[in-house]
Length: 118
Image (cartoon, rainbow, N blue to C red):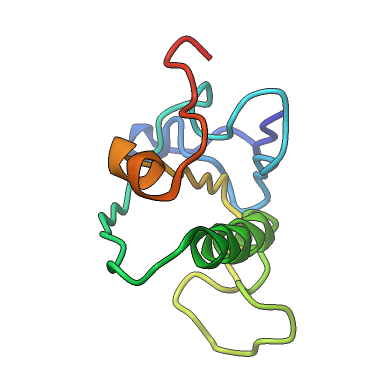
């Protein structure tokens, strides 16, 4: 459940989660899908190198998920890390992280593709 701070003073900040806002990483639905659209987004598209196998890809996704879960709590991506990243100190501010996997991943590494209907 998304929690937010008091309503913003200006319309410029309307709908923007406050510094204490937290959207849980785990839940009934993927965070960021049914939550209010954020005013900012960062996107990355990556291709797997040919030598990446299923165990390596699974380990990478586990590491990314753990980092995303920590960041949605307003913590550093790696436990014990002290890197003063630009967003640290701002709290989670309603951060959501969404991973999308293309069909080639399943074709190359095997596994059942998720159904578009859920």
